[in-house]
Length: 212
Image (cartoon, rainbow, N blue to C red):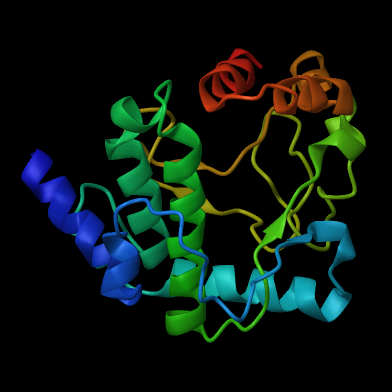
């Protein structure tokens, strides 16, 4: 089973240059990088950039799966299944943050190479909406869709989407739904973030992040 997951991982990252898949040993030499990709907060994207990103994700959801993992139905679900299968070794461990950073990079590369996406990776500054996610403009009926109030999302780009991976470790047919707990979302405030970033070593910072 593990070997199959490894092969699937290689399939997912095949679009990334070999040097990026197996990074070199750590060194202190300066980088030769001349072009830095800037990730933009969702609300700092133009309307055209937002549409381009959402169109690319829909494209990914319509491409055939390649990994052969259980329950996959599209290129997008390849990424879902990979994350699900590796959950126990990429969460609550030291590599949690770097692994997911690389995962986002691979996702971006697939969007660029297989769906012709030319824009940046958008991110959500949760501090802006801390404690009131349910009122966030992120959940617009014209983009990501409304929260759905613990039921199926019925508007936006992902309206009436059927999923087959999850919840959790399960493989069941279900609709895309969202359930927000603003007691938990309050822990994304600037105070919490600044507290974690104040640590001078990675271990303490990571433990702070995991603790929420």
